[in-house]
Length: 494
Picture 1: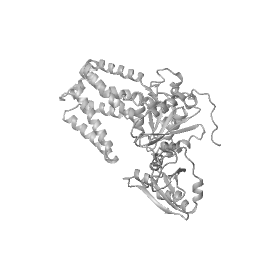
Picture 2: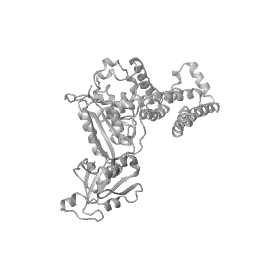
Picture 3: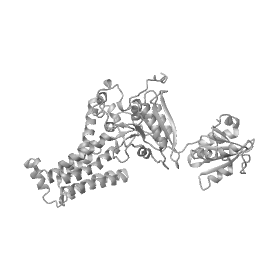
Picture 4: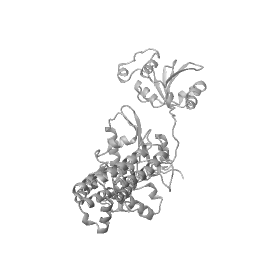
């Protein structure tokens, strides 16, 4: 709660007492506030007659629950007005724009006519979704809660896991039109100060009208905006966020966004899942290797089919080649067109299933895939071998836990298909050379994207594709290793 000094007359424009005040701020009056809020239907101006004087309260009804309004504003005005005034804080800078911004944040402005005084009461209480499990990052083992669209709720989910005074959060407002609040969270004694400074610098340089989700902020902060690969990691799981914070990373939370942004990140870490740390190291290592090699397999499976049939049939055993030629005997298209046709059909089914209600989408995906695949083979539009390869390739593309990485594999696959159609295996090798060169030149917040391979950090190999037992995984990742030698702060009570 804070004091805001009003003008001399609440119903007139009035004049300021000094030239400096006139330059520093616009005079705050009820008339000026009403003029600025014209056309906003949920803006409420309500007069309340207290035992001593007339009071006007101003708020947005869509951002405040009535119960909260009565409990924090109306009842104290009628019974405990002096206590309400004593609990207010005096702000450093007051002007009309600040009052209007306070109203748009969900606060209630209270104006005392006789005292000619404005105060702000924090009453923001819109409907919020409850804390439930995540559909996008589900797991069998480990915590099942997920972040919500409330910034304060998300901070509480982190702070109840990290009960340590070293956990710091700094709030900023971005978006020239939306005035969206974000919070930068880090462990003061663990974080790499260079990474933290880079994050704050990038945030200060952002000039964008509005943010509906943190994914927009992520794209504006990318070191390489034209790359198909994600350069920051987004997660909706508090336990994953805490693991990264303990490793010295910087997290960014945004109000009205469920996901949290982790930076910096490496290519290999995008194939890890929070569930890996709750599983046995043998199972976790197997699953990580499956995700990692599945990424490369999904982008070469159908292109290799094209290369072998179009340019290198001698690579296959005679019986296998005979079966392939027999299955394609009536197909009128070249292998390139055949593969592109089926890949586009899979993309259409995937997109249609995503946009439809859950139960209908699942039915469309399963039934549509079976019906279209069977019909395409019977109509001699594609070979039955290609149906199997395309289905396996589609399943492999879903293995990475990061959805943006999954999309990247789907995009790159088309480059490999075109290269295989033009030059065969030689074209695929050229595409692979470009892919590895691109990955080696990428950075995440200035840190090498291919850490720990380039630059080599032997200790990081213990938690890359293979996850060693937790007992031996003690050192933090090189990409986020703290430079500070400051002693850790006092932890929470025992």
